[in-house]
Image (cartoon, rainbow, N blue to C red; front, side):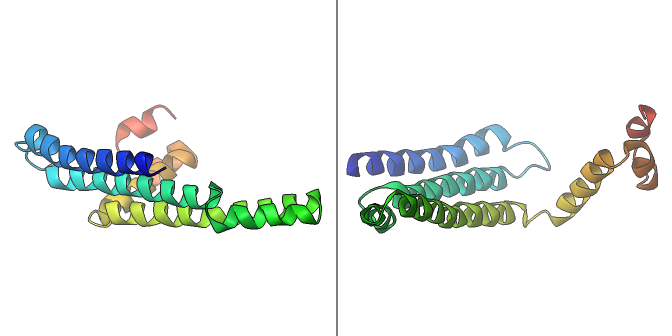
Length: 146
């Protein structure tokens, strides 16, 4: 397990460094684009994936408490194993959900107006595309098809 952990941490660090270098080289001269912002989004996503992997390992590996507690339930019968497993499975989702929410908020925090406009745009497509687009004063190509 230690070798796998070293490999994941080492490759993640290399990818993080490579993201900054590649974004700076490829996107550095384009006006209006922040190469460091894009690279930072890559690093936030990478870090989120690593953290989700760590929490998944905690909740599924026999080396840690949650699975040991489930196995202790086998002494009383199969039903308690199922109940304990379902309960532990429900508890294990909080970390992934919280990490994903924090990552989305971190990456989209510098661009709140784009997020609001994007929401309006997609909401207008979902709800009666023609009339909602007209009310939102969208371009002609959104209302031409409806």
